[in-house]
Figure (cartoon, rainbow, N blue to C red):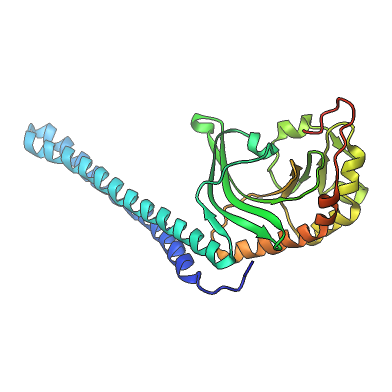
Length: 287
């Protein structure tokens, strides 16, 4: 992974400028549209009062055209922003030595991928981390609620694959909202050393507590704290997942996250590559 490639600035700057332009345009067009509608409505009202049909029709047409032109203009801006975003991620992938994937598939039964409905993936990167472990990055979103309570949740997902096998484990950082309160209530968890209880909750399938503590040792938890990460970490189906609660829009943000992920991977890889899961009776090893 090459994090010093300088040729991504133009695409990133263009995308950020377009985002700001779209925001300004939304405000301006909103004000103008309300003004045109107000003028049209006023003209329509007084024309009706005077019994003048033609001015009244002009008022109706003015309201319609104001709304239509605003909608077309905003759609044009949003389409341009989408294309710039795709260009940004393609250049980012090339600059960092990865392949670009527009909508990468979900390949594991992670807890996050069970949340809500309307699940979708976005711009992704595909390659290897530290020239050894298969790696994927992608945008992910899902929807909860409906109507006025509808809410879209956006994440960036980092996925690293290992050669070992291990039970399904979820380390919840208590400083974010990744894990819903309902699941937090019902998932089996184990007690961590006192110095880590305020920071993390560790969810483990019943019967696999020893295996969990052999992987999430105090040294590893301290390492995660030292990295000042506020993300959740999940181990499932020979993969490590890290979920970030924001969409990345700048190259330096991605490079910073990748640097931390590389540090974590190098620290935990020896254990995960050599780990071998032994099923305990008929106990499930998944959450």
